[in-house]
Length: 381
Image (cartoon, rainbow, N blue to C red; front, side, top):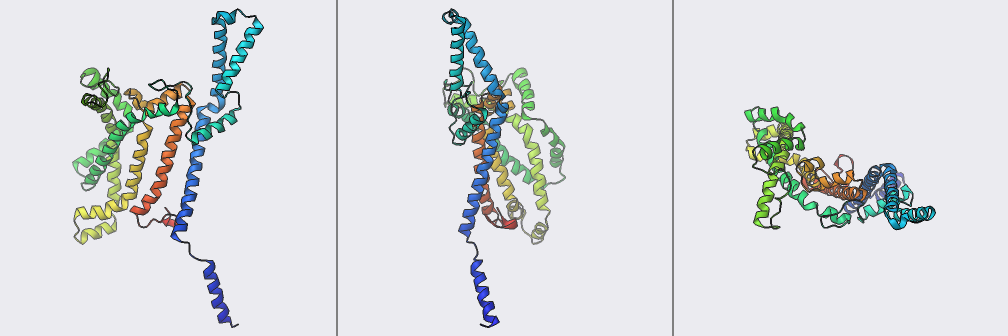
């Protein structure tokens, strides 16, 4: 066989060995790896939450001490138990303490309980709370969390979504008017957003509720509440949402407009934008094709995290306005060392965040043709 024939045969063999990977197999492999990675991230996050919420086992020590004190006092206050001989009375106390330990799984080592807690949390078997209860009196963590989701979505969902699109529209308009009076005002007032929303909320309550007495101090509806889902109910709800909305807007609107305005200005100064202006394209076409299109992945990412933030609530903010949301609930759970409620809210947020990040990879490929899901190098989603 000649050298030329051998070279051709070797080339064919190498070509067959290096058969290009199909799009389906590439995407399937990427999805599998991405799902495993995100799940492991959720596992680590929830595990650390359990360890921190339990203070490395110190909360278990506190709870054992509370159980011991409870049954020792019960033995003193109960005449029948108090009348028993000291040995029998102590035996009764020890028996009740051990039964309570078993009921709360405190008879098992801390690490064993932690991994059992982790398994239940990841499978959304949230169990029963240790100290908290729902408005209906249930100790099921699922019901405790579910009853706080609607108030959180009503306030932060409505306000967050409206403000997001208002901020984008105003920032885009402001990027066309660099150096104008309004632009200077926004730049000057941007540092005011460094104060948290609850800080502005205190002042708004003092002004509009305490001094002017035209708006309520807090809560979700009037007390006693009007009939659920009636016209009076919605009027009362809107009235109670005014001050929280103003506080959120005072905290984030100006800095968001300033950030987006600067972001749009950076893309507006690119060479291809100047070329489009030289070709005579209208300002609307330039913004749509050459400013908004390349910034769309960032806008989509910000919007996705706004949606995620809606579910978290704000502990201090909701406490200031006495708003019955998830943030205030987890604040109470931390104060009561109610680990099931803390872990329940954390695992729900972790799953929502992981799902959002997973979906974003494919959204990027849809809005930006340069991105390929599971691609190599810089084109990887």
